[in-house]
Image (cartoon, rainbow, N blue to C red; front, side, top):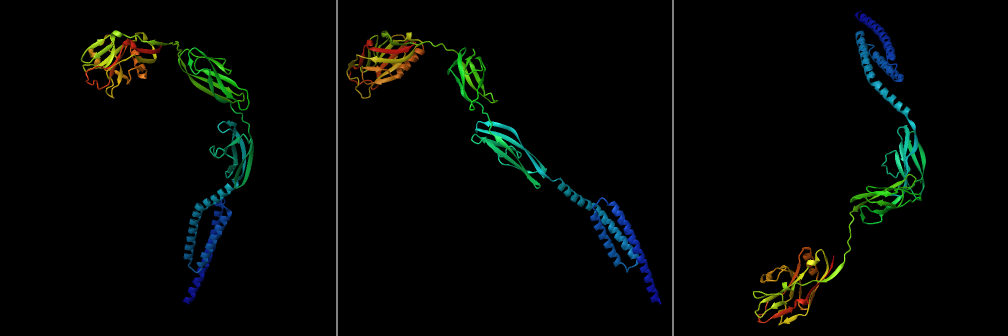
Length: 466
């Protein structure tokens, strides 16, 4: 009997479970309806699949729980409902983002468009003298999504103008070019063309400015011209300007320029126009100097006057013989002698020496003046003043001019002319000469060995300009 009662209780529990199951299903149906209303803005197919999967999970779990107690079934249902609630919260956080991503992709697809393209010349035609080309600069305007890739059939700028601009050079022997540009993206490809034609007018070619004189002076008039040509045969016009003085009719070529009255640096400029909008300019710096009065100079040949009373010869440590002959050598006293002669140059002040020649002639040879192979007659320039010689003058330091081993002498070396000019420029009234033999000074034979000249046979001939 107890056994039967226990069995009957089991059947009652099953009835309660069945009742609870029905209640749960009703509750789930209500929740599903609410979820559908709340999530109505979301994608229907995704919500529908989500709800079906959850109902299947609930049904499966309820089937597994059929044989359990009513209290356990109720806990299971509440647990499932709680899990479902958490899942719905997570879905509310994740699914909208996923859905928005899909919508965004769909939006990008919707914005895609086929490219459009348009070419436009924004500079040119212009002439480049350096390259002898006529060039254009062209820009392209494009639209399309995604942004199209742009390609040009020619770009002589090598990309330096940017991705949407090019330069096209037309050479003289190829006067036309058709530029093609293409724009392409995933939606298509389009192109546009523009025909470029040699249409350049070259600027005048200026070779330089020419002046009628290489040397310019204040207050004078000179002719100035520009050497210019137009390679296109256009008629040229001119516009001259100067930074000093004045130009007579600045629109012609050549022009007359009246130089300023002040010395200094100035500039002459000219602009040459071809009448087609092209102008070339150039300028040249010039210096305006002071007018120099040139005095015509005359050349004069002179035999300079001797001051015989100031000449003669000196025996070193012996006699002084002023006013007589000139003697160089040694004496019977075995002492050296030097000869002196003085020329008056007071009348040459301000002159320029063109030439000078010192001549010794009609010599009297005594003994053996060249007793040594090393002996030579030396000519020196010195200055003892406008007075007769004295013993002390023997030791004067002279300036060497030349040496000779023959008594008949014509000395016209440049050193002689140079020293004469120094004496004139120095304001001296005398040009004085000493002659003596180089060592050994005596041969100790106790006789005269030397060359003796009369002062009248010694002459200084010069040519000067005054």
